[in-house]
Length: 109
Image 1 (spheres, rainbow, N blue to C red):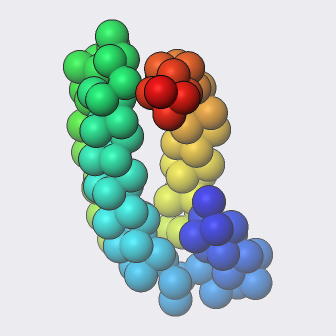
Image 2: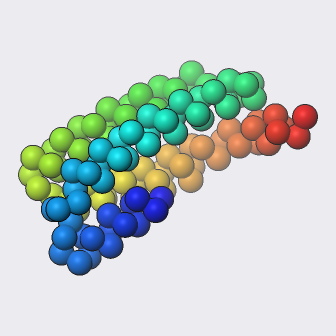
Image 3: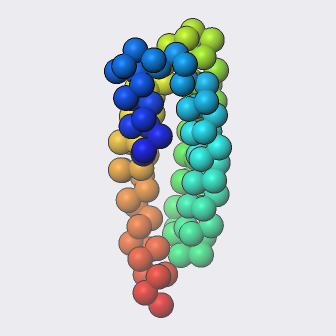
């Protein structure tokens, strides 16, 4: 989230173009690590919708890559920020909450 906040700050300061590529590269790498960690936790916790969630991750990773390329090509940091906000609010705050009770049980044992 701090990377998204920093990106937003630079866009507000009129400097979004200069941080667009490095920010998106950082977020793509973070996303790969984040998803791998999540999937491992879900598997260990016995989350019943693991395959469905993994499919969401694959779709989101493709969208992330596509939006990154398009926003860099168009030099449009606002496009990337809009997508990142939707991802954060949608995937993390909705989809990820579905497996958290299973992971909590795993950490209590």
